[in-house]
Length: 68
Image (cartoon, rainbow, N blue to C red; front, side, top):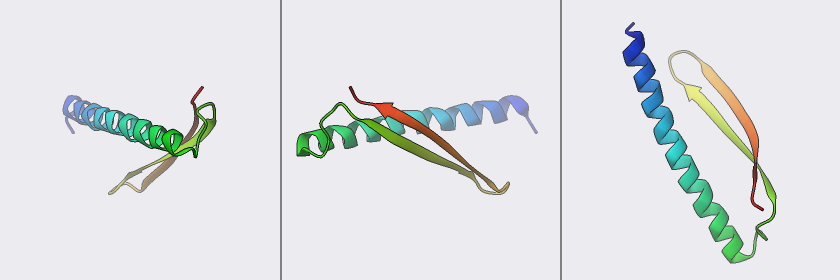
């Protein structure tokens, strides 16, 4: 296995995940505030499930996003 190539591939994937996730969260929260579903001062529970086929990886990452 080429460790450098492997590492760069992981970093590239995680960059896409990070940018896409942030955009989706921002859009969803803004729409919810606009619709009155959220006030804008909440703390929202967040969960991401990371799966990797071929190795049986399923890992939950849980956190909180504070709006105000």
